[in-house]
Image (cartoon, rainbow, N blue to C red; front, side):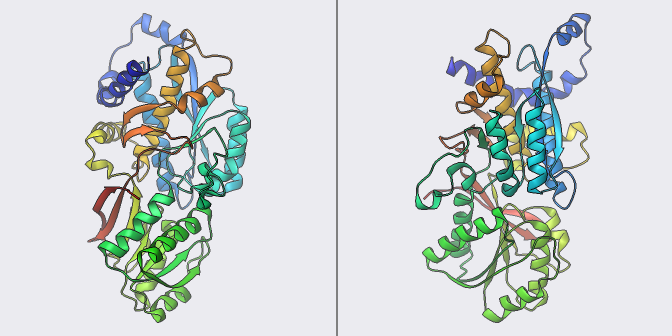
Length: 411
């Protein structure tokens, strides 16, 4: 049964997206309409910053989940089930995320959730979901504590919440990958490290720093900035005075772009590097100074370069969404598809119907999900983390991000 299911899943991800446009134009017969009326509606909740400074990423997440449900419905991926999404805007604020989680739990039609973008927001939501057995699959969270517990750094890993999964790799991988690129490929030796004091940024900066020093590099200075502030001239001056040959920033693109701008204005002609939080065109737009040479890591390989993502890219464009799929579109589609496949398993095992304890059963089924997705092989380990450890380094070249190195991380 397991091998048979895998074959079906693989075909659905590749052929399903390819035939979406054609299916959308097919005339419906009366019998089709009757069948649709008998279908059970399963709602996938989507939490992301849909407004505010990070909305460029949040809208891409929402649209990509919507696309997955459209593909599933057109291909009748789960007989007897129609999928739809219900969106929630957390504005990248933890308290809003917690309120959204409570609202999703209270909606009995929601049987799985995708999101959020921010690790700090996710921390406020995990416990709420866990109490209700409602599965959460994030396409973007990278803080290791979310899945491996507070003592992960001491190699005492424990999974805090069985309902938590993610399709993005962790900062344990991303931070070390960045440090290795800076030291081995870019030949940097003296780095100034800045973070935004948030869960994601501070955690990523710490992991980067530890690996950079282990390799033989020196952290010549550290500082912190505050989210939504715009004057980082003091930090820029410190970067200049320490003689740093590079900057590493743990944070998001609104502050990262301004930091890069002001570091260069201070006369420190050095690159600024960050994680997936700065990998967005908005990082470049936020800087008024030419920031060619700045760097970012992001999870996975460039979606545009993946043969497995060609159908996703084509069908996303065909839907006419107002916003691009951005950095996490492929991972959001795969997160939604993993929930859809879990629903499929649960329905098949219950004689074609959803069981009364569908949420708990779907969470359990997610642990065994395995398929070839948009971003590559999609499956989860014992902590709910993705087994995909592919990453890419991007560089700003002529005012645009260009991939310069893609690899699978190895210890």
